[in-house]
Length: 425
Image (cartoon, rainbow, N blue to C red; front, side):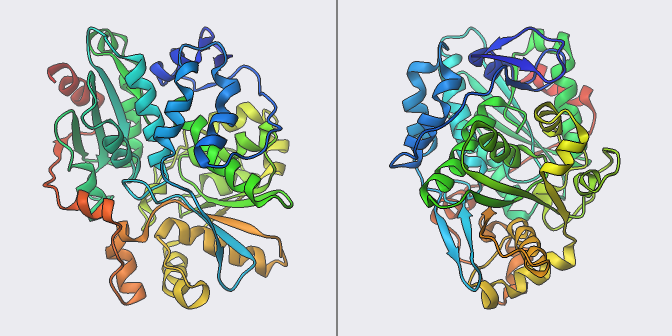
């Protein structure tokens, strides 16, 4: 299969080329030239479902023989669909990986793929990551210690939780963390500027591990497909917390392939670009607003380009989805009442999905929804614990990371500052 740029001004690429490049040469995002039809059944394991779902995208590619191993590595921990107490709903738990966030699946798949593609290369491949909280640690954990690759993580100083910041800076070796004096949008702008800098890319081989990467997007379809196929009743509807639209678009793409997925509702925080668009306003990116659901503090969602590629007509796009905005007070209320109402402790991002579920119920919608739990609440103890009134148990893998020493380097919010660091590394 070939892959094209959303902007239509770049040559078609193979899957390996698209994964290695990250961003298309014209600045667009890679998308499949055609959408294969998935009519299969779910596998016995999440890895089996991933392999069946992804196989058509790998046909004829150099990575095709590696697909079983890639899936086994990336999906070595489960993504259980757990009933939600007190409501005919469920929770898709995506936080059982090494950094307790959904991004572990895609990051591990991408790391294994790039390690294969860059084996024996003359120069190390540098992975650039802009993170609003969870992406950086997942990528750091996935790539740490791998030969011939190195990772530069950029995060907005003071806008991630203390435990997130510790995770981002705890790796060392081939992984460096940079505290950027700015917002996530500044970090993302610096990364995009680096990819657009032809002289820099000639000096330093670069690729991305953000949600713009096809190597992260495609595998993230697997846990939606596995949950929907395993349930085996009517198409399973999802409420997906979203900021940069990568995880949500994975569900959208899986549905487009024929996976039995019903409605997909986007649950955002106080950054209202998507809710305003779906309410009928022009798409108007702007500076992000800091919230307690910080991993979704995005004012210009990169994957909106892919959404418009799939739905080029605005009216059809707006008719296909619903997007909701949840403010910090609503998030706090959902966390504070989560244990008494649902028997669960929510992290701030999953709490957004819980608020949206409440709105749907209030409107008379009684369908079964799966809330997508994108991170473990222990990653946000300074927000969650005062609201629930007790300590939140830390998963063993996360506890081990928090015991390591951590540090991050200060970096100005300027593309030139990042370019200097990359050239001198």
